[in-house]
Structure formats: structure tokens, C-alpha cells
Image 1 (cartoon, rainbow, N blue to C red):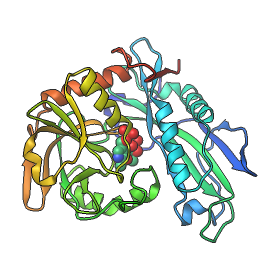
Image 2: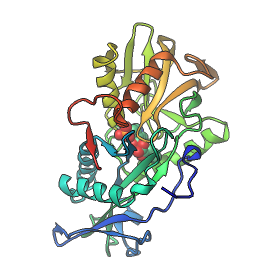
Image 3: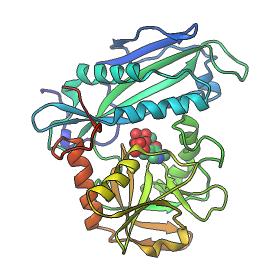
Length: 339
Ligand code: PLP
Ligand code: COI
């Protein structure tokens, strides 16, 4: 594995890997896709993805096992979520077999870029579905591209398992009956300015409140939120406008079945953060990133510590990543072995 990559120093940046998968949809069906070395997409200037945001994407990872093999974590869930996004934006669904086959091919073809076991790095995989072709009216495209590319990554938030701080935003990321629960670029476009404002004040990212009442924590710009209470409850917000995070649902299961916590999806009032002894952000890119403190207007609320991860957050992290890297027995159907 003689790639000039310092696996332990990886952040979350684009690295061009040799191969990506690309399939086209036209005349009502998917044409056979293939791997390509070309990382440039040539599309019509009138593509709906460019003008009207008719695009959606996914994020999942490949993990190098101790025995040198490679695991995928719950890729069927990413396939299902991509299809929910596609339905909401009136795009053709990508059959699960095509989705999984594309991901498998891309990981196998780029396997030298899956970071070695023990470095903490993973291969981040980005499936993308876009409306293309000549269409200037506000209508669904007649042609689509489904592509999957990948790159080795390290921690998404600078600290990794060291806590970082977050700030509650005054902006809304999503509307109550809008597109918050699907993974579409428009949600992230809306989060760029708030995210930059948060970074400028030295926060890792912002936290959004529910768009209807602005009293409840919804999620982080790029991850879901969870808190641990004094009574050993794992609590994560419930809302129709947050992304149904695959990591979050996995943690709800592991909290209850492996750590013996009470797992709750419920309201998390921003005025009631005292109930939590620990808090974190969770997601594919974020994994589990402990939250040191949250700035909300003039108040700065510290959870467990600004410098040390809390014990339950650490246990959850070890259980989740142990499963992903193949060191801990996984619940049925969670791991797909690539090689
Ligand atoms: N929320 C947002 C806004 C995200 O971008 C992500 C990342 O995918 C998540 C939550 C976490 O979702 P998942 O665990 O499926 O990666
Ligand atoms: C992910 O965790 O997969 C995400 O999509 C978060 C962010 C990089 C957009």
C-alpha cells in the first residue's frame, strides 16, 4: 500500500481516487453503469440540478478490518434514504441492487485508498443523484446521473474524540414540512452561511432549533444530536425536519441493547440542557463527536467537560466503531463485507 498519504493526519477533504461509478437514466430506465477514471461531469447548462436543486446524495464509509478485509456499514439504509430523497424531489429511484453494486465496485477498485486498520481513517463514499439534460422550466428533468465516488478521510470535526464547542443558530435549516428529512443539497446550501458564522467564532458547527417554535434542538448542520441524562437515558431529538441519521438509529439500538441505557427519541428543549451530563454529535462523517459546550444567546452551557470525552459517550463510540471495523459482533445485517 504505497500511497503517499499520511493516514493518521487525514482530515475531511476531497482526494481524487482513481475510480468512480457512473450510470445514466433516460427514456424511463437506468442504462448499465460503469467505472470511470474521469472525475469531471459534463452536463447541460440547463440541468435541473444546477438551477432548481434537483439533486440528492448519501454518505457512507468503508472500514479496514484487522484481517485486512473491508466492511461496509448498513449500506441498505443509505440506499433506502437516497430513494426517499429521490421520491420527494421527483427523481427516479436507484434500485438497491444498483446502489450496492456501485458502492462495492468503487470500494474494490479503490481499495488501496481504504486506510489501514488502527489509523482511525476510513474511506468515505459519496453517492450522488442529479437531474441533468435540457430543461429550463421548473419541472423534473428527463435525464439523470447516478455516480459514486470516494476518498480516504479522518475526523470531520477537528477534535475527533476530544470535545469541541457548538453554537445555536438563529437561522433555520429546514421548514416544518419541507426537505429537512431528506439529504438534498438545498439543506446544506442553507447551512453554509450559519456554518461559516459559527466557524468564525471558533465553534465546530451550529445547532439548529425547530423551525416552528425555536425552543427545541433539532440537529447539527452536518450530524444529529444526542444527550445522556443523569438517569442513564440516551436521548436524541424527534422531528419531521431532521435527517433520519443511520448512525443515530444505530446508537439508539446499541444504547439500549448493548449498554443497558434507556433509549429515547423525544423533545430536547434548549432551555433544559442541565438534564444532560454528556452530549454529542453523531453521523457518518462525525462518527461520535463529543460536545464540550453549547453557546445559546449569552449562555455557554458545558456538559461533561470541554477537554475530555464523557464515559458513556466513549463506550458508545467504542461499541459503534468496534462493530464498524469488525472487532465487535454486529447486530444481524449491519455489516456487508466487500473483501
Ligand atoms: N444530519 C445531517 C444534517 C447530516 O448531514 C448527517 C450526515 O449524513 C447526519 C445528520 C447523520 O446521518 P448519518 O448518520 O446517516 O450519516
Ligand atoms: C455525512 O456524514 O455523510 C454527511 O453527509 C455529513 C456532511 C459531510 C455533509
